[in-house]
Image 1 (cartoon, rainbow, N blue to C red):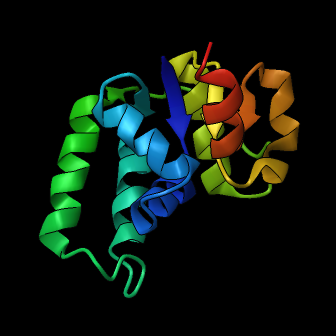
Image 2: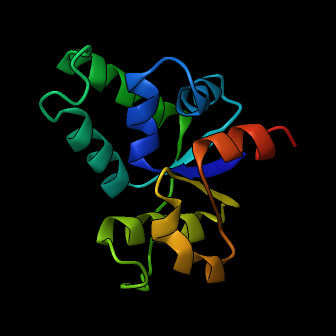
Image 3: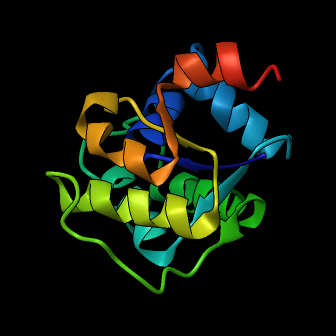
Length: 138
């Protein structure tokens, strides 16, 4: 199953070894879930992960190794179009455009309310817990 995963989900999954966000990371590395990626999204992941204090238990080399593995499990998806602005945050618009370009059914984020206008694009915006408990079990 191909999905777009917001940076906040990846960070939450790396900060805590329990919970739905961590389960999503495990599903990706088990190759049961394929993150649809773009260069801007991976660069955002890296920038946020390397912020001082964001992941204090990980060294820079650990973050690089994680991102290498994450990208190896993912699908590179070019985005040749844009509808900006649809959402209030340009980073959220980037995720919505990636989800549409990748033809994914789900965009997984902890900020569901910020994506309310995304419904017209036929992409289900769900929390990590909703995805793991309701959708992934299909």
